[in-house]
Length: 622
Image 1 (spheres, rainbow, N blue to C red):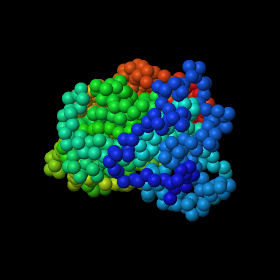
Image 2 (image 1 turned 90 degrees about the vertical axis):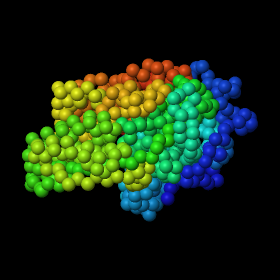
Image 3 (image 1 turned 45 degrees about the vertical axis):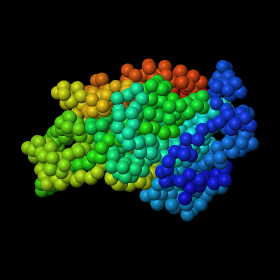
Image 4 (image 1 turned 135 degrees about the horizontal axis):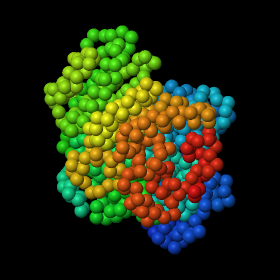
């Protein structure tokens, strides 16, 4: 149940994964002869003027393409051009799209389906769009497009991606790239933009034997379309009895934004990061060409796209990735709670001793080092339930271990917790083939913020730093934030010493990535309230940064207002990444916040609360 204006004949993409016969079709010179607006940059008629405009062309400008031009562009992409309204337009009484039944679906049932993930404009955090069209029943307010793009190309082929890149570049239109919407800070949306929607680039091909050009890998692999989601990739992996490391959330498109930001998973201590799985890429670059990137061909792009930031060097259309032997994932889960009444021993006991609870909190995190050194992944949540009640959720995830081996592995931690007076007992681990995981494939947009920190090993092995880090983590939980820890060690050794990648080198010496989730609702927030919430979160993050010298922040899960983001997200790779960006995209065809070179641009005329970095404005040179 989608509510789009279709400029073509129909919405014809199928959600069923398929081969590459159609996906691999490319733009030809013949395609551009009658419509030069989609010609690639190397042709004289399409070269960008040296006197580059100050701002991207915006709806209402004199040089914004006419309806006739948009219609011709739509024909050039085989009717794949959409002009989508915000999904919640159906809830606004004064909107032409108002529909009470469809609004009820949005408010009551959409989150239990793939509706939002399959929507051409929805992003899974609302505030970057500007909160201009929130779902409210029978709203008498006004729904506007805000930071959503003006047009979307539902691409199913390389040819359509090329045409979209060329049209946007030649017409000086802002270009954005969106897959499933899992970017949380506005890198996949923008007011007045043309959006390349890669969600239906669903190809898959198993390669029983693949030798990486210029690399050391020689073994099974898979070619995957950029729009393939985790649960779809897992279906193919199970069919071929292999493992394709992917994001923990089953609905993420792992072969787009996940790898461009680094990509962690429960297998990171076993096989490395998402970037380490990539053997070759097919990319449409700013000049509109479709190129191969690997350690030999276009090696600069191969370096930059693997962890050097999404939506900034080109559009990934497909990738060849490692296919590891099938592996099981065994998980031992338990919780312990600080509350008013103590309970009996078990997998989720309650205790009344605050000192014991926080000592146990520290010991769980200390167990992160032996976990990652054994190839595991320690998942934790520290949560405040009330001013006097807190809960610690723990999942020790061990790839390749049996039930009995995992049970034996966690015993030292349980003994320590028991000695503190935390009676965790009777834990029953579970196991399954990694690629047979199941879970929710729905979801709905949220409207809050968070920040992240990558903890280097020294922050654990230095007693002074560890004590400071745990005190800072505790303070976030006591102040009402959720402290979400993911212990992993994606070293170059476990990754098989892959070709150099643009991902922050801090990852190679890390033992934990942590998110700090703020529950402050950004809908209708005042300037004063936002600034207060930001100061509060910044204060906690500063304490974590001080306790983790040499650390960083995870590009894919972060505060878009991260201080010194160039170093925090990319570390010592930033200067090289910036050089590649300037070389590959000198006129700024691609732009997304906090990517290399993005500070050369800014959003102007933002119609939002001052200080909130939305995409609801014109993109101009800084």
